[in-house]
Length: 280
Image 1: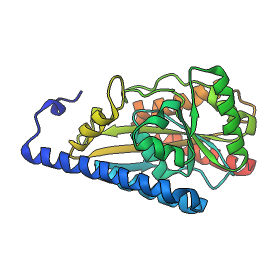
Image 2: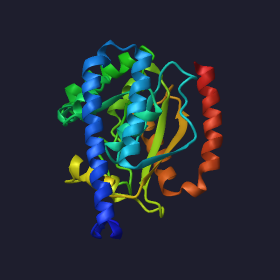
Image 3: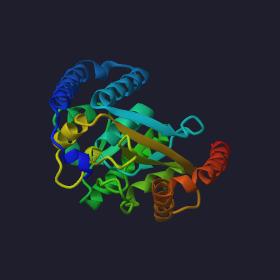
């Protein structure tokens, strides 16, 4: 944990933290009620616009500021699978602000207070990661989504990390992209303080609860969320384990030696984007 996180809060900082916590809890509570009543009858396009706006304001209230490098390729193909390293529940808000996707999440997310109800309303696909049979069921659902021109988002680590490493990828949920020949676009996520150091407050890792993460976040002056979209990976003639290795390497290199790879990745991205358009 960063040293300044152990310092006691000043009166001013404590007041700001309290106000932020009150604001975000009230915001999520009111918007959940709105979603419950009106979301099911809204047109699909309006749903995406609303959920994107909801995520943006939630991040703003918490104090998270977004910085995006490169852009997702979402118009060149009917649908694709997005994958990212997983640090926090904040990742879901970031992706909702940036992408029109359906998420795959562990089954206990649906029981989270307030947020769990929102994940249900936005069409999240739930999985029991301990069950191989459930893996097959969810892969069938992801395949159906991709075939119906719906983008899907997966966190292949299967759990959250501390943000200082990328855990091994589980290749199982990449099978749907192989079956449908849908491109995979990897995304690198990290949370930083103003001084450029990893922000431990943003992590939802180990024994931390959602409330602890939220409280620590609201005590920060601000948190920078850096999101980098990698080059799309074509899935034709590739196996899921190979795809897991490629995308893991993309994300690991971006987070570990970012200053050495941007131009190389940009060149590959341009080449692969052109190939994606040609394939579609």
